Length: 351
Ligand SMILES: Nc1ncnc2c1ncn2[C@@H]1O[C@H](COP(=O)(O)OP(=O)(O)OP(=O)(O)O)[C@@H](O)[C@H]1O
Ligand SMILES: [Mg+2]
Image 1 (cartoon, rainbow, N blue to C red):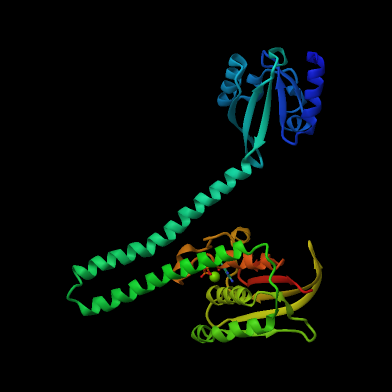
Image 2: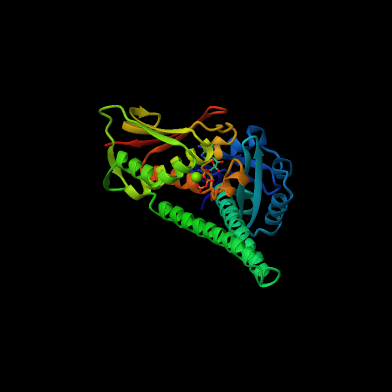
């Protein structure tokens, strides 16, 4: 048989092995001991204090009281707010087999789970919203075509054109969503083809020629002699990366400007090791406020919602770019000077 003292010693040793905060309360609800993680959260002053002054959260206090009275284990949520934001815990409250030993509280950090859940909810809400606007427009025009415009061929031609544009927008959105989910599911699978990045960029340039002509823009490729441009990659996905970056430089760079694609080699940058190929896509647009830069790669994030939508953008382009670059074990770096232009750098390892 263990005495209450040896039992407490065993418990204390076990506390130290648990990576989550754990505390033991006496039968009257005062803190008897806590492990290092709990001490970091509540401080050393917590020793001997009552749970009522310690946690100050009615739900948790109520659950503790119930366990102390009934001897049946319980559970409650605990939220710790600091300057870094709110941390969410599930607290499991378990009575020890001998009442005089008190009860044990285990704090499981579920902040991350809540964040993932929030992101999922936001994403569904965003997708629904993005699909609803064109759909509402289409439904509205169908009604007009059946009613007021039933005998007006001019209005019919105009409205059908708008309906087609809106349907194409939905189509693009679904295409981009599928692309994003495909890249995400391949995230851990490194590409195994050899790709020449300069070929990819030339192909994108050729495909975008009509858009360049329409906006009277020019594209210049700068490639110093001897820069290696062959690397392990997925040719279709890299095409998607440069197509979006060059298209953005055109769309947000303004009429009659120059888009420069500069290739250069680097060795080791930050956490990236070895030989690297950097491809800078540089425009002469208005630039981006530093406030927006960290958020540009979020799904559906646009600096100017109205302008981007008017240009047919879905706001998923840079999110797809970021995922593809990550799959290639590379980085996307964005720098910009207001009034001068922006530079989107794709940095890829060459083996
Ligand atoms: N070169 C740039 N100059 C200024 N702003 C830019 C530039 N590239 C992107 N942005 C801003 O970042 C936002 C997100 O870009 P992203 O490519 O993800 O979406 P989009 O171009 O609006 O739509 P999509 O690429 O899906 O057609 C844009 O809406 C725009 O506000
Ligand atoms: Mg884009």
